[in-house]
Amino acid sequence: MARSQRGPGIDPPGSHPSRSMPRIRLRRPYAALALAAAVACTADPVSLCGCSLPPPYVIVYGTVSTPGGAPVADATVHADAGPPGCQTAVESRDVQTDAAGRYRLLTGGSGGDAQTCIRLVALAPAGSGLASSDTTRITVPTPQRHPPDSVRHNLSLRAP
Image (cartoon, rainbow, N blue to C red):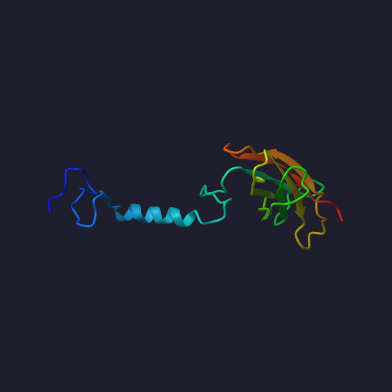
């Protein structure tokens, strides 16, 4: 069968008995790229692939430090998100700090509410000799059908 004048990779309608719509064929490098993108987007929503929770959601980021201001690696930041007032938690997340004491977490909005209350606490790494930070509550606007909001919040561990 002669190739159609429609362009490379597209078969004309009716060229195959079981198909009435044009068929698009991907060349191997593009098919591999599409597969890699699909696999990458099954990772953690905080990863760099750009996959995320459906809006509304909030990105909370910051640093964890000692009482003297030094960064704390491997501390755990625990976040509970829920409706305004922080009486109940709809979602809980934990994330570890990196070597520079930085953390970044993604938490979902509290449903139909226009605001989300987030409770944050930093837990000291084992053997550090430090105590957990005070629990902090922040309220973030999370209107439906709007881009995500981000909040920077630094946490400080306490002396034992």
